[in-house]
Length: 267
Image 1: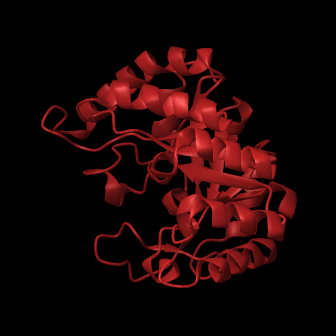
Image 2 (image 1 turned 180 degrees about the vertical axis):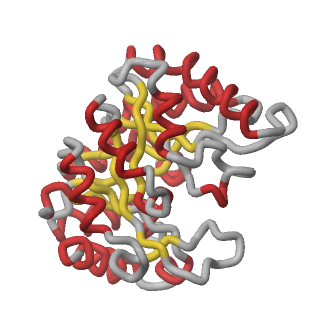
């Protein structure tokens, strides 16, 4: 795998302001960038779009939509789709939402998620935006995402056209599941891999477990095998590195960006 497919998710180096991140991507020859709604909104969606477009970067994804089990999900997700259009990406990553008083158990949460995506998919499709359901590791099932496996994500996605709804394959969330390789093959055959993300798994996990994504090559995941698996399933799109890690965020952002690029090429 070469640099042409590399994308850096904005959260990996969130300590860098967007103009600095864009400038460093240009300097290092990084072709793709995955954006997050909150910092983009703070900078200005139109301004961010002009900045990235002017630098010649490809916006590989926008994170994130979803949280369908909470109130107000529809307006928020329609806004996310509109932002994706403005930013020039074709993929909105969905973190589906966890348990709430309205959806107090996993079956009811997954039913709500499926219904919500069904209501949203035509709006996204009309605007050329693909919805990519991201299954999260089961440790997040109660509060962030009731969709924990790639098979579960596909069961939801397969209710809708592949051009509208697919999945995100994220190594951090899926590496533990021995059924995941078969699900990657299934997703690829159906044209439903809409995003592929890398992060490593290191232990011990930090308090709160959210910011424990390891730098590439520092943990337990065979990242090269996962990249090969995705390619064999037909994925030829961007490979996005998305790391939530307090230790990385405490360091110089340019140094972390350079290190991440080096590790991507190495592993």
